[in-house]
Length: 121
Image (tube, one colour):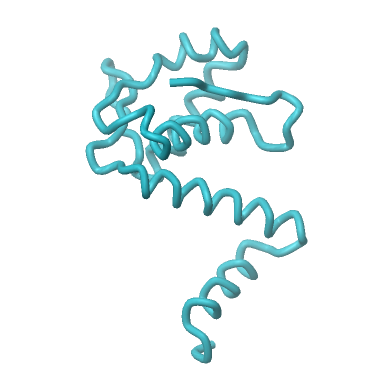
């Protein structure tokens, strides 16, 4: 699995770590049950802080894409599939674009709700 980060990007490094896993899941280069690199090893290879990698892994756990197991590391969840990985990545991109044009999270959620349920709000 290839992890790409850009220290000059406005996207946080932990978000970039998470995005690399989502991308690998979406394009099929990673699959459910696959073990992710040890956080310490990945941090060293990317020349970033260990806690930055752990935050990225925790975001993936919160999204249901990764399981974190004490002593066994991080594994791609059995329930993770390429479609879910792509969808979560699109959601992150949508949120970033909404913030770039000045929308708050609540305004974005309202816009999404109105789009999905026209005439109900």
